[in-house]
Image (cartoon, rainbow, N blue to C red):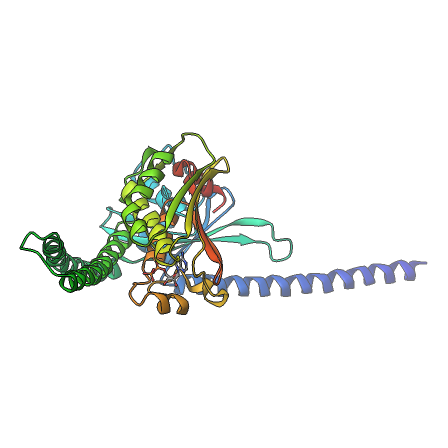
Length: 391
Ligand code: ADP
């Protein structure tokens, strides 16, 4: 009996010893892994802030401290209410953790004036459990893009100066052609006036190109200088359609408005939204056959207004749809029917709509027509706030 108890005790001790050894091994392995992760984090040039689901930082690497000019101890475990900022430190941290107004939440730029002027690009990556896919928190990657921005700025300034210098003489030439056609300098014969009309078309294409380049420069530069004000959307859409009346008449197409909502105030930047919607309308006219009808349909899903521009034109080949919103991209069929064109209009439209917190999509069938649909938040502020917790 005594021997049996001794044996059992010895076995238990042996099992415990083995378990202990395993645990030690596991813990050594984990601490080794932890060391490796910490080493990787510390060797990164980009700042990294790991947060829990409530956006409370749990870990910070050295680069983040350097970039933000804050010590890890003032970042980790700090709970910040973006609507109630206590001091300058919280302001810096809050701008990194919570997307600014109008940002889409996955990547946005912020500007710091302290401890020195900097432009930072912040990326947000949700952290999920690999198995259950349950959200565990977020990783914020902070990149200092100050130098790139200065270089970009110089490039944009150059483009802007050159474009303005081009635009003035081009507009002058247009005015001269128009006054000649009007007979201000004496009567013209049929062929002379035909030649001048062709000159006007070429001149307008050139003005369109320079304007697009200028718009791209403006939109890419001024992501946060949007003048967001409330406007009555139905009136705005009607004005936009009227602004294209002459062009539509010239191409013998008709633009119809189909409103499925009553008067509604929507907050947006009027100048920029006019560029975005204007490009969709111009395209629908340019790529539609004579005598066809273009419909601009307006409705809402409660949080957004939906603006659809529907045409029955050349459509877009399916394999080209995915490239359509890239800079300078033009589909093969479009190049055949219209040799001029910049491929910048849709890139601009997407940029502008996304800066409003909205989205743009296209559905199209070659030779049947296209529908471009803009989804625009009625109140972009609330969109930015909701994306704060679900980045
Ligand atoms: P552009 O019209 O100056 O070529 P955009 O950026 O406005 O440039 O459009 C990019 C391309 O998308 C066009 O070249 C054309 O291939 C296609 N596209 C845009 N809108 C339409 C449309 N309504 N119908 C057919 N193709 C279109």
